[in-house]
Length: 201
Image (cartoon, rainbow, N blue to C red):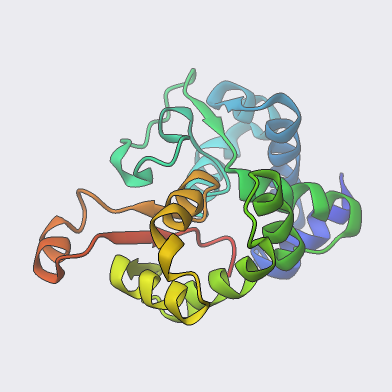
């Protein structure tokens, strides 16, 4: 059992879950981190009969996502599958959160956000924790539209870089376009709808 990671997960995301389940989750996350991915078969090997429930939990929290949608495509666009050979990966932002939690026992959002944006060469990395926090503050059920994101960028004097920042947010796994689920809403409001990763806030 990785006590640091288990403690971090229970303190933020899984405080109502039993210790054995959270231990399985921590093992799965560490394996995914170290191996750049994980299959349903490996999740079953780690957790036994619990694997279907665990896979649903991990996907629902966007701690892991299908490898086919890894590069910022719509998370919900991929039909959820329990195929034993299905491969999953961890979004970049989650990788950093897990790394930090593994060492410190804390789910340190600020440090992870700064470090992740630094690694992709974002020059305004110091503003990113505030930007991300405001995304969640202005969301409803982890949904936010493009106009609100651009308004937040403007408030942070980043208006001219809003498009690039949206691409970066998608690429590191903080947001995902809701192309199919909210097509009507997107057309009605004339702005894209994005899903926020529920494991951050």
